[in-house]
View 1 (cartoon, rainbow, N blue to C red):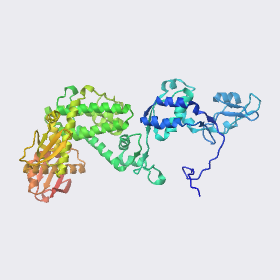
View 2 (view 1 turned 120 degrees about the vertical axis):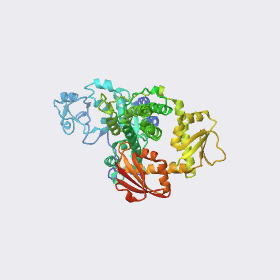
View 3 (view 1 turned 180 degrees about the horizontal axis):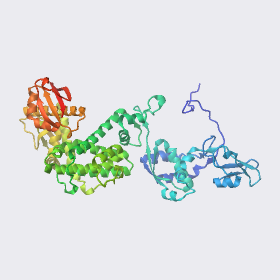
View 4 (view 1 turned 60 degrees about the vertical axis):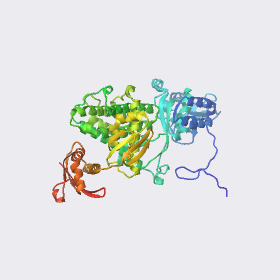
Length: 591
């Protein structure tokens, strides 16, 4: 028994029989060098798609079998004389009509098969061959046939060659080649200027999706569970020319990021509200944190544009999402929240104006990645009298290179390294981030580190949960945990007194209350609450010591510690929690 490969039908796995038949060819080998030279003029994304994969295909290209023995398709316009064997090709329907004397309303089979022509050479009858054209002929002429050429020439002269085409990497020998082949055969050049070759969507194990394998995920199910924008962002943030493994976990990660972006705008609209927004000239902004955010905005816009122009959709999409999640939400809003929410207009004015300016400029960029989310935000919060009716009609703001402060960017990078080092140091001894510490000492010989701390000490204190930040060396008579970063070392004081412990407990209470607000669907800054807490004496002390802080962060008009649950007559939600081994019951009442 000889074991060997055997061809089977790709649909039903039935064995196939291969036999030789006479066919019609176009000698493509004669134009191989022209195909290669025209391909080299095309911008391929990724570059290796053209330089390696497509070029390798062209180097081995064979003559084109253009005939097919099928029923449906474009009939080959070839007539052969039954008597003398003369061959003629009809160049148009008008030529066929003139030669045959028959007017056809449909040039497909079977009607065209019935048309005969008198042979000019011998007077015999010429009949059409029964073959149809290879379907790749149809796709290869799409760039001009769709414009009505050759009957109409104006559109083709304006739109040839096309700027951009995109298809999967399986189209190297398919559509990419068929277009190039017909472009060179008929016009002597490539019919496209740039090509983006994308990958396939596979299942989590890297297999192609098929219903018969049971791994096919209907797009309708994805949209139903997560929405169109989430699915779009999931795809756009991945490298387009690589195969993409679909996963529900990946969808959840993207959804969480989009939810953060939504909450950024909820926060902004809640606290900006009906306040007058003063139009700012970003060049007049002086606070280093606000200057940094405006710099980051302009860097994002610059990087986004450059990535899109190079068809690096994943870089552009991640740029806008990371800006809103990491820079705006995770850093800027944490630092600026109290200033934006301040009732003192002199304090809040610049911060509100800067936040509004940044988010207003971001919206058109966001609409490219998540159009539905951006449209909702624009219509609800940013569309003013005289503005276009849709975010899609806004002009994409231009980045201002003057506003890009590279030194400030570098200093904030140092700050982020310091904050990261602090988190790692805490983790090494099992110290929660919500536990405030008295101070951090930063030791470094690098003058840039000193400047970073001087400019952004508030950022370090808020993000690392500290009361003080100093430059220097740690005293030897205190307990410290050490961390390092590129540029120096940090030392966190382990001298945790009663005040720090109580403040840590207050932070834990705030977190639980906020979770309960979220469960009730209450919006910070809009719906007010009353809070009742039952706990031990230390919990009572934490509430007494940090009452204003708990109330402010919870949007609570009342925080009351009770000894007996019966003291709470009305509440919207009650829950028992465990905080540092302590049993705590919290009741929230919507006012």
